[in-house]
Image (cartoon, rainbow over all chains, first blue to last red; front, side, top):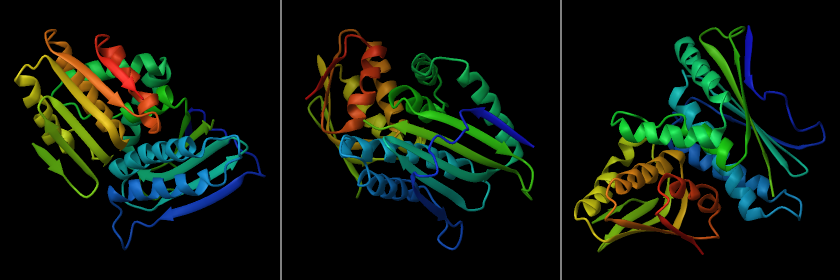
Length: 181
Length: 112
């Protein structure tokens, strides 16, 4: 069974410049540190491939920021397994797919979170969540990354949860795209 | 006060807090020592607190949450002013720092 939230249709076409990377769970032991180096690498790679009318500094940062936030979630919530990344650039649109495995419980709680999030205007909800977090000393601030991407970067995001063909848990694919300027 | 690693440095000079480098810490707990240092400046109730972010190249959303939390703490003390200095050449600052002003309209934001 596959359940989709947000925008999960691929934005970029077959002619897009494409790039795939797999972060292997073993033997390096995937860790927090890999989020930053991987996102910076892909940001650098694609900012060099942008058309002349795109600001490369902004493109490098925005691509890196978006991937870092999604990878931080993937590293934080994954249940073992590799992380697959496919990036593409078509004209001024950058798109990324990040695939990782999570357990069924995490998937259910994340779906509940997404349902609430997608009903609201992201900028307004971001401020509301920040105010709530400030009142709660135990708050982890989780979820603010997605809202920051939607509000401050105008990123289009989608999530696909697939529970077939996965021996253990749920396969989560996060789709994210950005219009570079 | 100074907190320094290979990736970033945070230090204070009077009531100015400087941030430098790349901060991608893993969440609220990891940022706690930095928030503690910031809160100790606020506890001395200066007239004006300056957050100098002009050398902070990257801050993840957990770090932006830290700045937002601190802004809300300052907002509770109307006698303490706050000024945030950013740089136009660092993209995240133009995109995200205006949220601090939305949380606390008296916050003075300069991105130059």
